[in-house]
Image (cartoon, rainbow, N blue to C red; front, side, top):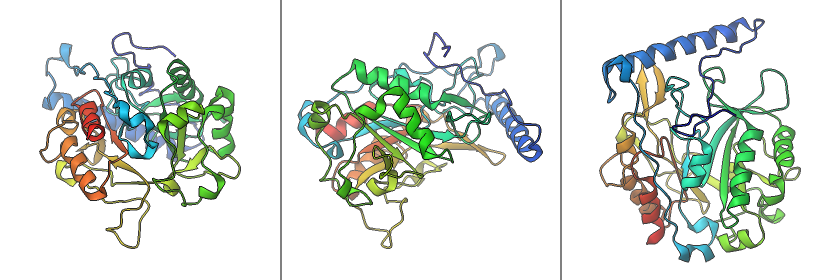
Length: 354
């Protein structure tokens, strides 16, 4: 896949409308969304929302990504006792080649994300509109931004794991419809099925608690260093290493467009008692949207504050401490946009060091 030399980002399509002529409703929806996206892009630039207004220099200036600061004493602790940074829509990357598309959630590609310390990669899987078994990784609509195939994504992860035999990586996929056999096929073809962690059969179906996970040291020694969750469509009797997300994890609310809306309470799955904190892995969503004419897009302008290590409302540091207080343990994953902005790795280190 071609990359941009400045950001190491894959060149992804944001304006190629690969739609089928025989689906007029879908084509109209895609065209409308694409045109609206372009109008918003121009309006945001013209409004000067943190960007220069000179047309020759209307580009964001992504910060160089920071780096993870591991806490060695946690190597012998459970996977479920640690905090990790995750990237929301990890493959949706804004680049000069796609005009810094507002569909993008990150400035640096998955290779850079892993190399700098991101340990959860989240993405959304879609059926290939050309009819192949290959799963495409896109957010909302592949015509707006296609982040590549699942196989390409998994090959990058495998290359990282092969080069870093002491690291553990987590993948979280929103499954919008591809059948389980297509997901499993990509893992088998890349060899990642062989290094994927599989919980004991008697711990399936929601029985596994935070006290049942192995230590990172055990995962490394057994070379089961990849954990994969599917939002739906998993069947662990058939494919035991593709885990049903909500049997093992709860997550907080998302779709936030105001800094004071971040919560720590479990939003999915829902429990009869909304104050109940289940003894499962926690995923804290901490990313902000902007809106224009009713269209939501990732808020890059505010990302340096959103991902800050401080304790003001809307900052990641404040959200992290609040969730730790509620859970009475470390939050496990912070899912962020534009991970290179702010101080996400400082927040992670702060959670793990104390």
